[in-house]
Length: 398
Image 1: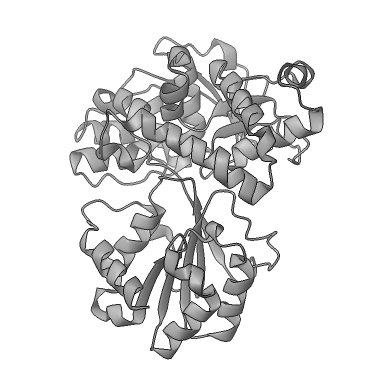
Image 2 (image 1 turned 60 degrees about the vertical axis):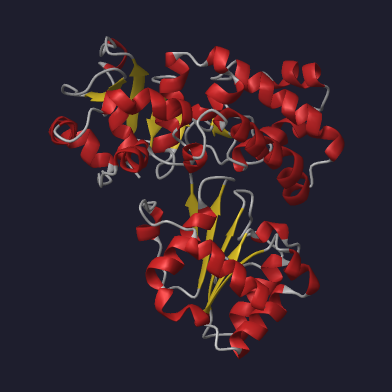
């Protein structure tokens, strides 16, 4: 226990609070059991340490942060750790990377049930299953999902600003007034291309030159370690999974022909469709389906995009054309809090009600003129007109 406290002290000392992710303010920290899911590198560990430093610094003797990749934890169970901590007066237990501990769900359930005065926060992979885990935590835990920086957060991080979130419906109704107000503070187009290339994962600050290498490290860790461990993907299939990702990346947006693709990479249809589902679950892709369909592991997506534009530059730079980047950005920013589907009428339908056609600054209303609740989303414009909205403004949703 002493070694964990010493590591916690060192981590807190090196944690800065100059920039705080907006999720910090969305979480109900009063809950007894909180789960935070997200892809590698989005900043889950930093979020926990910042919360401790900002809100619990006055009683660190009652706080314990432990990452389950710590060698120390191998010598005792997570439950035993919590038991010892409570006996020492512990009140707040922060457990990082629970997916690295095989029996995490059962032990956290037991901790919750047996120590009613202990508050527990845990983080894990995007593939973490709180509802379907062997010990169903869904009735006990409130779960949040953390994704990479929004364009708004990137601007705040880069320019030391405090730009606020904007609600989706406010953008649709008042985008001209909102854009005017923001243009008095920033030049949004001046920083937009930088965000598309390297602004999604906070670790870009460490080295922009090494950023593409780090992105590929993240992808390899998800495919080589998390998918076999958390989705029981046979390791002999991992090269095929990477081959599948390469095919998707080279032709984003990808419209899957399951029969041809199955023959090309040598796996059967059901396995292929399941792999496509796993890629989205792990936050490597965003899979679009027609509206009003219940999504299952055996349903073929109608269109597939990479999860964020930084992936496009890191693994498919030759295919990073403006049209693909615009659509990838729009899906990534909007789908975090809204339902987005494929539709033949326009590029996307959001919440089964709002239709969007994405394009450049010269995109016209021709394609949507007979569609109710339809909008043009245009790149390379600072301010919109009527139902024509700047693309960058959708980067302020979270």
